[in-house]
Image (cartoon, rainbow, N blue to C red; front, side):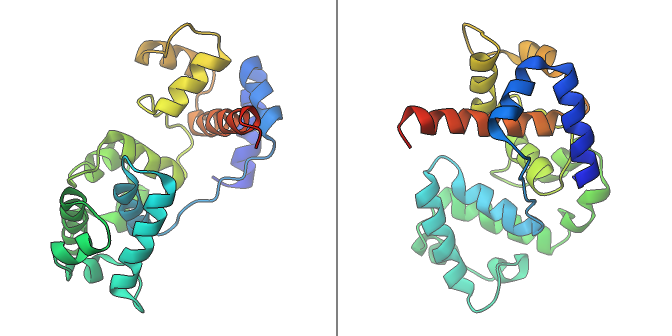
Length: 210
């Protein structure tokens, strides 16, 4: 995602989708900053599953302290025991997932260094070899780490909620409905999804008096 690509994306989305044009105006400039440390992003994704943002942040800090002053790497985390990870606040299941991630990356079974050269589908196949990483997490990785422009994470509840609210649907869209609406977004579905998330968040903050 470079500035020229984003400008092309915004021009395309404004022209092709009047509803999304309104959300772009509501949110303002595209400010997504990619997480370039691919391993760290996957660790954070596992830690954050099904818990609050503040709880996830606290656990991540404790995990970081387990390896300090070193940085979080596959080699360093693979040396830890499950009980050590659990002492940082991780469940037994999540500790197992993180060790599986670290071991597979260290042993070369999952090739994080080369995923940037893979297709979106191949990246998803590669990452879902890891316990605890499903298609949604892999799609978030494609958007927020690799900067892929045309990812539509239909299973994301926030995106489905935004589509329902912004496009006047009675219920959350099924995959077919999401794909139909996103047809106008292609080949910039990632940028459109980001604006849906951001606009929905801004409306929630305004509603709650933030």
